[in-house]
Length: 223
Image (tube, rainbow, N blue to C red):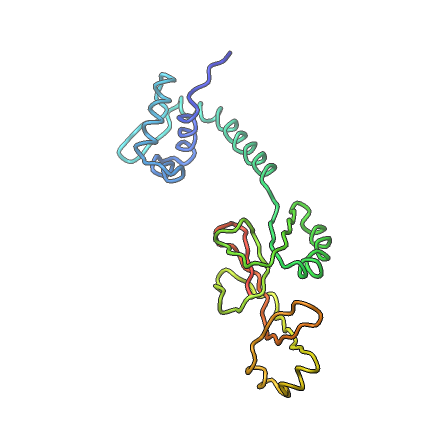
Protein backbone atom coordinates (compact mmCIF):
# COMPACT_ATOMS: atom_id res chain seq x y z
CA UNK A 1 0.00 0.00 0.00
CA UNK A 2 1.42 3.44 -0.94
CA UNK A 3 2.72 5.52 1.93
CA UNK A 4 0.76 8.57 3.08
CA UNK A 5 2.73 11.61 4.25
CA UNK A 6 1.82 13.36 7.52
CA UNK A 7 -1.41 15.15 6.60
CA UNK A 8 -1.08 18.35 8.63
CA UNK A 9 2.37 19.22 7.19
CA UNK A 10 0.98 18.32 3.76
CA UNK A 11 -1.89 20.76 4.22
CA UNK A 12 0.46 23.51 5.41
CA UNK A 13 2.74 22.94 2.43
CA UNK A 14 -0.20 23.16 0.04
CA UNK A 15 -1.40 26.45 1.52
CA UNK A 16 2.12 27.90 1.52
CA UNK A 17 2.72 26.84 -2.08
CA UNK A 18 -0.63 28.29 -3.18
CA UNK A 19 -0.11 31.59 -1.36
CA UNK A 20 3.59 31.87 -2.21
CA UNK A 21 4.46 33.05 1.28
CA UNK A 22 4.88 31.55 4.73
CA UNK A 23 3.48 34.72 6.32
CA UNK A 24 0.34 34.72 4.15
CA UNK A 25 -0.12 31.00 4.80
CA UNK A 26 0.19 31.66 8.54
CA UNK A 27 -2.46 34.40 8.36
CA UNK A 28 -4.83 32.16 6.43
CA UNK A 29 -4.51 29.30 8.92
CA UNK A 30 -4.35 31.43 12.05
CA UNK A 31 -0.89 30.26 13.15
CA UNK A 32 2.56 31.80 13.38
CA UNK A 33 5.01 32.00 10.51
CA UNK A 34 7.50 29.87 12.43
CA UNK A 35 4.81 27.18 12.86
CA UNK A 36 4.34 27.09 9.08
CA UNK A 37 8.08 26.81 8.56
CA UNK A 38 8.33 23.92 11.05
CA UNK A 39 5.49 22.00 9.39
CA UNK A 40 7.06 22.42 5.96
CA UNK A 41 10.42 21.26 7.36
CA UNK A 42 8.71 18.17 8.80
CA UNK A 43 7.33 17.30 5.37
CA UNK A 44 10.67 17.95 3.69
CA UNK A 45 12.39 15.65 6.18
CA UNK A 46 9.78 12.93 5.54
CA UNK A 47 10.20 13.23 1.76
CA UNK A 48 13.98 13.60 1.91
CA UNK A 49 14.03 16.66 -0.33
CA UNK A 50 13.73 20.43 -0.22
CA UNK A 51 10.36 21.79 -1.34
CA UNK A 52 11.16 25.49 -0.92
CA UNK A 53 14.19 27.70 -1.38
CA UNK A 54 14.28 30.04 1.61
CA UNK A 55 15.84 33.35 0.66
CA UNK A 56 15.97 36.81 2.25
CA UNK A 57 13.35 38.14 -0.17
CA UNK A 58 10.97 35.24 0.46
CA UNK A 59 10.40 31.63 -0.56
CA UNK A 60 10.38 29.89 -3.91
CA UNK A 61 9.33 26.37 -4.81
CA UNK A 62 12.06 24.01 -5.89
CA UNK A 63 11.52 21.79 -8.92
CA UNK A 64 10.55 18.94 -6.58
CA UNK A 65 8.17 21.34 -4.78
CA UNK A 66 6.52 22.40 -8.05
CA UNK A 67 6.12 18.81 -9.20
CA UNK A 68 4.74 17.74 -5.83
CA UNK A 69 2.17 20.54 -5.45
CA UNK A 70 1.04 20.00 -9.04
CA UNK A 71 0.14 16.41 -8.18
CA UNK A 72 -1.32 16.88 -4.69
CA UNK A 73 -3.12 20.17 -5.39
CA UNK A 74 -6.20 18.69 -7.12
CA UNK A 75 -6.51 16.04 -4.42
CA UNK A 76 -6.38 18.64 -1.63
CA UNK A 77 -8.98 20.76 -3.44
CA UNK A 78 -11.22 17.70 -3.86
CA UNK A 79 -10.96 16.94 -0.14
CA UNK A 80 -11.98 20.51 0.72
CA UNK A 81 -14.92 20.42 -1.71
CA UNK A 82 -16.14 17.04 -0.48
CA UNK A 83 -15.93 18.24 3.13
CA UNK A 84 -17.92 21.40 2.39
CA UNK A 85 -20.62 19.41 0.60
CA UNK A 86 -20.96 16.92 3.44
CA UNK A 87 -21.10 19.64 6.09
CA UNK A 88 -23.77 21.51 4.13
CA UNK A 89 -25.85 18.34 3.75
CA UNK A 90 -25.79 17.56 7.45
CA UNK A 91 -26.13 21.13 8.69
CA UNK A 92 -29.46 21.79 10.39
CA UNK A 93 -31.63 24.30 8.54
CA UNK A 94 -34.40 24.31 11.12
CA UNK A 95 -35.43 27.68 12.52
CA UNK A 96 -36.86 27.53 16.04
CA UNK A 97 -39.62 30.06 16.56
CA UNK A 98 -41.35 31.04 19.79
CA UNK A 99 -44.72 32.77 19.47
CA UNK A 100 -47.93 33.35 21.36
CA UNK A 101 -50.49 30.56 20.78
CA UNK A 102 -53.06 32.87 19.19
CA UNK A 103 -50.54 34.59 16.95
CA UNK A 104 -49.07 31.25 15.88
CA UNK A 105 -52.45 29.75 15.09
CA UNK A 106 -54.07 32.69 13.35
CA UNK A 107 -51.15 34.42 11.62
CA UNK A 108 -47.93 32.38 11.53
CA UNK A 109 -49.01 28.81 10.78
CA UNK A 110 -51.35 29.76 7.88
CA UNK A 111 -48.37 31.39 6.16
CA UNK A 112 -45.97 28.47 6.52
CA UNK A 113 -47.14 26.74 3.34
CA UNK A 114 -46.27 29.75 1.18
CA UNK A 115 -42.95 30.13 3.03
CA UNK A 116 -42.09 26.47 2.43
CA UNK A 117 -42.71 26.78 -1.31
CA UNK A 118 -40.04 29.48 -1.50
CA UNK A 119 -37.61 28.10 1.11
CA UNK A 120 -37.82 24.35 0.54
CA UNK A 121 -34.70 23.51 2.55
CA UNK A 122 -35.71 25.44 5.68
CA UNK A 123 -37.78 23.78 8.36
CA UNK A 124 -39.78 25.92 10.80
CA UNK A 125 -40.24 24.54 14.31
CA UNK A 126 -42.82 26.49 16.30
CA UNK A 127 -43.09 26.48 20.07
CA UNK A 128 -45.98 28.37 21.60
CA UNK A 129 -45.26 30.22 24.82
CA UNK A 130 -46.57 33.18 26.76
CA UNK A 131 -43.60 33.97 29.00
CA UNK A 132 -41.06 36.51 27.69
CA UNK A 133 -38.15 35.01 25.78
CA UNK A 134 -34.61 36.11 26.53
CA UNK A 135 -32.61 35.84 23.27
CA UNK A 136 -29.31 35.63 25.14
CA UNK A 137 -30.20 32.42 26.98
CA UNK A 138 -33.10 30.79 25.13
CA UNK A 139 -32.81 27.97 22.61
CA UNK A 140 -35.03 29.83 20.12
CA UNK A 141 -33.74 31.47 16.97
CA UNK A 142 -36.78 33.71 16.68
CA UNK A 143 -39.33 34.97 19.19
CA UNK A 144 -42.43 36.98 18.36
CA UNK A 145 -43.79 38.78 21.39
CA UNK A 146 -45.76 41.79 22.56
CA UNK A 147 -43.63 44.18 24.56
CA UNK A 148 -43.19 47.92 25.03
CA UNK A 149 -40.68 49.07 22.44
CA UNK A 150 -38.73 50.83 25.17
CA UNK A 151 -37.75 47.43 26.61
CA UNK A 152 -36.05 46.13 23.50
CA UNK A 153 -32.68 46.83 21.90
CA UNK A 154 -33.48 48.09 18.38
CA UNK A 155 -30.20 46.66 17.10
CA UNK A 156 -31.53 43.13 17.59
CA UNK A 157 -35.19 43.65 16.80
CA UNK A 158 -37.55 44.33 13.94
CA UNK A 159 -40.99 45.85 14.42
CA UNK A 160 -43.61 43.74 12.67
CA UNK A 161 -46.61 45.91 13.33
CA UNK A 162 -48.39 47.86 16.03
CA UNK A 163 -51.25 46.08 17.72
CA UNK A 164 -53.95 48.20 19.35
CA UNK A 165 -56.00 46.40 21.98
CA UNK A 166 -59.44 47.91 22.46
CA UNK A 167 -60.65 48.87 25.95
CA UNK A 168 -63.71 47.05 27.18
CA UNK A 169 -65.86 46.80 30.26
CA UNK A 170 -69.34 45.80 31.34
CA UNK A 171 -72.22 48.29 30.92
CA UNK A 172 -72.50 48.55 34.72
CA UNK A 173 -68.82 49.45 35.07
CA UNK A 174 -69.14 52.01 32.29
CA UNK A 175 -72.02 53.75 34.08
CA UNK A 176 -70.33 53.62 37.48
CA UNK A 177 -66.99 55.02 36.33
CA UNK A 178 -68.38 57.39 33.70
CA UNK A 179 -65.82 56.46 31.10
CA UNK A 180 -66.59 59.02 28.44
CA UNK A 181 -63.17 59.72 26.88
CA UNK A 182 -59.62 58.44 26.64
CA UNK A 183 -58.51 60.74 29.43
CA UNK A 184 -60.74 58.94 31.92
CA UNK A 185 -58.93 55.65 31.20
CA UNK A 186 -55.80 56.81 33.00
CA UNK A 187 -57.67 56.92 36.33
CA UNK A 188 -58.09 53.16 36.46
CA UNK A 189 -55.69 50.29 36.49
CA UNK A 190 -55.73 48.05 33.43
CA UNK A 191 -56.23 44.34 33.92
CA UNK A 192 -55.94 41.54 31.36
CA UNK A 193 -59.15 39.70 30.45
CA UNK A 194 -59.56 36.30 32.10
CA UNK A 195 -63.16 35.30 31.37
CA UNK A 196 -65.97 36.41 29.13
CA UNK A 197 -67.40 38.50 31.91
CA UNK A 198 -64.15 40.13 33.00
CA UNK A 199 -63.55 43.84 33.03
CA UNK A 200 -60.41 45.52 31.81
CA UNK A 201 -58.92 48.47 30.01
CA UNK A 202 -55.90 47.83 27.84
CA UNK A 203 -53.58 50.12 25.95
CA UNK A 204 -51.49 49.94 22.80
CA UNK A 205 -48.79 47.37 22.32
CA UNK A 206 -46.25 46.87 19.59
CA UNK A 207 -45.39 43.54 18.03
CA UNK A 208 -41.75 43.15 17.15
CA UNK A 209 -39.48 40.51 15.68
CA UNK A 210 -36.13 40.29 17.43
CA UNK A 211 -32.90 38.74 16.35
CA UNK A 212 -30.97 36.59 18.75
CA UNK A 213 -27.46 38.14 18.78
CA UNK A 214 -25.89 34.94 20.08
CA UNK A 215 -26.91 32.97 16.97
CA UNK A 216 -26.00 33.43 13.27
CA UNK A 217 -29.38 33.73 11.76
CA UNK A 218 -31.35 34.26 15.01
CA UNK A 219 -34.23 36.49 16.06
CA UNK A 220 -36.34 37.50 19.03
CA UNK A 221 -39.48 39.55 19.68
CA UNK A 222 -40.63 42.30 21.91
CA UNK A 223 -43.67 44.50 22.26
